[in-house]
Amino acid sequence: MALPVNGLFAKVETTGHEPATALVRGQLQTDVDGYIITVPGTTQTSVKGVFAAGDVQDKRYRQAITSAGTGCMAALEAERLISEEEEAHEG
Image 1 (tube, rainbow, N blue to C red):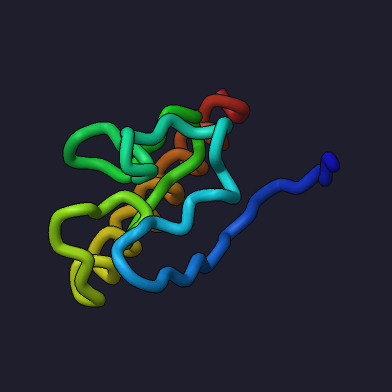
Image 2: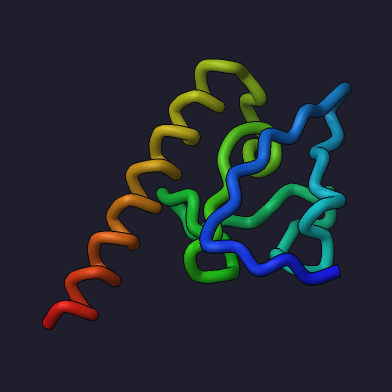
């Protein structure tokens, strides 16, 4: 099913230690354990404009505070990308 959208924010809840990444399986690059792979030091995934934060990409810490931190990173990175694209269209 295709749904044309300009943006999507999804809250994915997990139980246990397996990432709940079925929604993006086959669309984003994941590791052998199912965690979404991001560019080191960022939340950018294998698809431009798609960012991953929290337990779906953090296989080491899996804590609320680190999820909040990567969530903030993802928001800032998305904002930066939008600003860059707006500037490119204006110039």
